[in-house]
Length: 125
Image 1 (cartoon, rainbow, N blue to C red):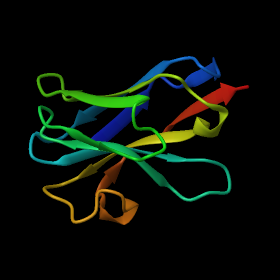
Image 2 (cartoon, rainbow, N blue to C red):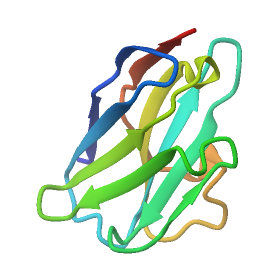
Image 3 (cartoon, one colour):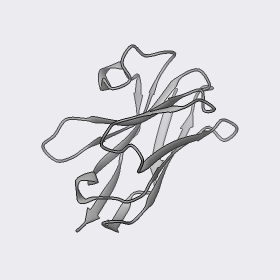
């Protein structure tokens, strides 16, 4: 049984930083796609960034490139999202997701097999 538990969300002022964590359990995720999505009120779930094989390069949405960075720790089965230069438009619930194996489109939330419960990030102006 795969479980994903996010933590690290909170309230931060514009320009600030946060680090989200996702504790994953239930399998070895080395060859899976692990990603972060976010969902703002009234909007669909949006791809933020992902990584496959935690030593590989990540893919990022254009809106977060240069500000967000994904990393992983295979030994601890953890996924992280370091966010800097936060903006009010980054306000959303952030979700950790896993696609078992490869994905044809990392950006499509329907591709993903498992989701965490989400953690709220609020950026005040």
